[in-house]
Amino acid sequence: LDYLTRSLAFDLGPKGIRVNSVNPSYIPTRLLRKVEEITMVELSKQFLHLNGSVLTLEDVTAAVTFLASDAAGFITGEILKLDGGRNLAGPVSKQYAKL
Image 1: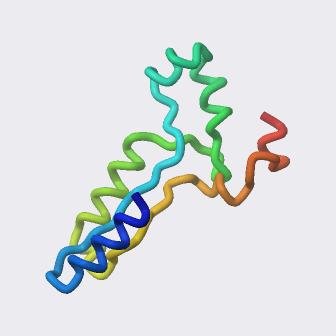
Image 2: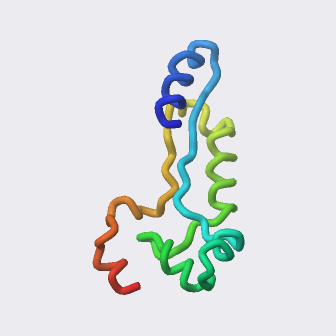
């Protein structure tokens, strides 16, 4: 999806069409909880991000709304990661060891 985003942005940019994508981290939903058979508290801890919160559908909606708005008029070909810095910490971070 990342390569497709960049390729489409390159091809469509001259026509004034912006192309961006959003790569969200895990979102602890009721469906995921049911599939994993763990409590929402456990699930939230598992998917805790560096900023101390859990990604929500509203967070993703806000990012997409921004990228589609005139405020992002000069942004194209970007892949917006919504991971709360989780990728910076890595799976063996001391912060995650406490969970």
